[in-house]
Amino acid sequence: MNSAISYIIDFLLGDQKPVKHNCRIGYTSDPQLFHQYNLVIVASSFFNEQVYGTPLSMPELPLKEIKGVPLLFGEAETTWHEDTLVVYADIIASAYFLLTRYEEIRRRDVRDEHGRFPGKESLPYRAGFIHRPIVDEYGKLLCGWLREAGVSITEPAPHIRKIWLTHDVDAPFYCRSLRNAVRETLKGKGIKNALRLLKQPLEEDPYYTFPWLIEQDNKVINRLGKKRSNALYFLKTGGKSVHDKPHYNLRMPDGASLLGLLQSRQVVVGLHSSYDAGKNPLFIEKERELLGRISKQKIRHNRHHYLAGREPEDFVLLERAGITDDFTMGYPDVAGFRLGTSRPVRWINPANKHVSSLILHPLTMMDVALSETKYMSLSYDEAFDYCLCLISRVEQANGEVVMLWHNDTVSELQTRNGAVKWHRDLYAALTDELKKR
Image (tube, rainbow, N blue to C red; front, side, top):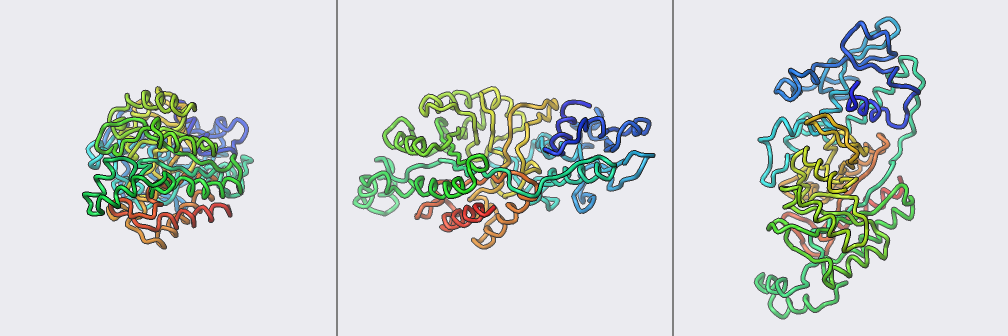
């Protein structure tokens, strides 16, 4: 059994591993080996050398289901071979396909204007289960089959293992430079009003919503404790692209004040690797080192700007740069479970099946994905209900809730193209809800 398959079995079982479970679970299509195990998952042709990496390896819609769970490979049937329970549903290949973003290496020609694989092109969206962490559901099926095969195994009561309250600092300030004042003047607000905005204290800048965000986050953290909840702020230190604007300098007085605030509140800082670094991951190491020097923190966490971690193999350079935990894995255009799981998972390189030490924390929901017209275009009530649905799915899976809210979307201003003013109210409502979990 190779390391990737062994890891996936471990991952599906979670914390509830029976003793020597690898001796109890077989992954083979050879009937002569079935008797060696309590439970056999019959391997489909997915990993065959003649199939893997070819069009034959792609699932076909509509998908089969087993016990109401979508199945990418194999057949929805089980049988007994003497004392061995034999399952023809290949949940191992199905989980691998989702966890590794395998679809993206097979569909390189499908990318949006920023080089990202669109969520609405993904198999989970097209098959109608983007809102379900079906890899976690496979784990529950596996535990049930083991019990049916006579293996003692229990599952914990549903709970949210951890809540990550994360914030991407794309535009920390609204009007703190002469260039900003000129912008406001040209927008028709007048030089007098522009200068007023420029001269006001930093704390009154419309985008400087960090004290409010920290207050909201602390309501959750103080209630649940730091083992079950954390706040993360992702800061930029590089990028020359137009998509990396506005450029800000954490060494300048306003940037230093922001960093001082975060440090005084003991908030963890991560790297918001630039749009340029998404296109050329070799830049990540330099950006990480710079943020570490300025913040005097060891930078271990990353999220790509624009969620533009473009190709699955790019994680090689992220890991090489010293990042241990990445929070990029969500789709910009639809909230849900991009990797098919709500739990942190080690990155598996689909090019060579290598299991990395890099931990991926799947993104559950992002503010602008919910509201922007070109994305989900939900109303406040629709967004609140959808987020509650995702949170409940995470709870059932004993996973992590990873929220992404930007400081500028909770501003009193209309902040982005297509943005709406209820992001602030929605964040407050959702953090209140999470305190109860």
